[in-house]
Length: 91
Image 1 (cartoon, rainbow, N blue to C red):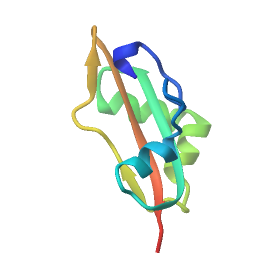
Image 2 (image 1 turned 120 degrees about the horizontal axis):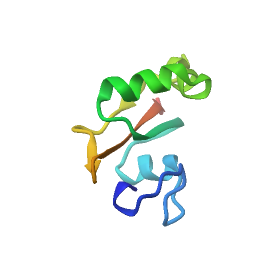
Image 3 (image 1 turned 60 degrees about the vertical axis):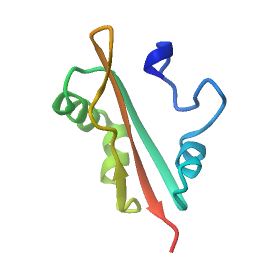
Image 4 (image 1 turned 45 degrees about the horizontal axis):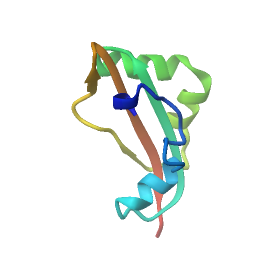
């Protein structure tokens, strides 16, 4: 997404966060996604999410038991772009 200066939950190919999680072989029952564009550090990203009611809800939702985070933060033209997926695996 950073490569194309595009930040949406549905990617340019039409894939949803759940589609992308499944594509790597993760078997889920629930997926939530937080994405960020602009913060320059992981601390800034997380603080922005915690300050946003919808993003904070994803992080704190007790239905999610796992979280994936890319490392290191993607950087393009001095702007950070990153995301995390909050998931609940299938039993």
